Image (cartoon, rainbow, N blue to C red; front, side):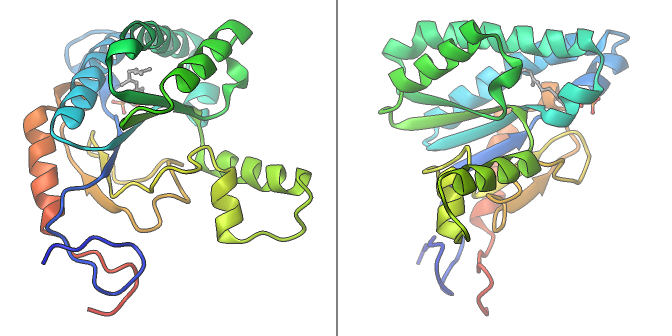
Length: 240
Ligand code: FPP
């Protein structure tokens, strides 16, 4: 029997993931291999991001989360590269606004929005409000850091008067409040680390690392990952 519950011992594979998260790594190396600037890799990466989100929706994946920019990327990479990524983000925002009326997609942004101009920040919030009742969900992690998210969540709870917190309290204060945890986190680009991504939410996520550089990532690989996930046994700490 295919069971996929998160609170007990009887957790087996066989069901497709409800929520897939992607660490879209390898854009820079992909561009370098072609003698092109890193920014070119991000342009290609943004195209693949759109295709993969579309495909996941088509095959019935309910939630997709993508890591578009970490707080550490923002702080440590050259301004020119950050601007290129933020320009791609703005382009995506424009397309998402245009498509929102006809698309069954809730768009959410997770991360520290203080880097955005008031105009962009307002457009992000407006898109979130406009799409909040849609069936499928996309979380775009932008200027996101897992540790910063946890610290912000605790401070939010303290400001609300809490003297101690429970796991349930903390979950209500995360950027991802109300969103189920990722069933599987996929990282492209041959690196095997989490890079400060969804630290709380990944507690029981399955992990999948693949050498393919993000701009070469394809729908076929999504199919393979889902097939692999279906064969895994999730126990959430329970005995076999
Ligand atoms: C990591 O590859 C990728 C990023 C830091 C940026 C990801 C951005 C996109 C896929 C396009 C933008 C999409 C939106 C929605 C803004 P890397 O640059 O670290 O690659 P490397 O490890 O090969 O250097």
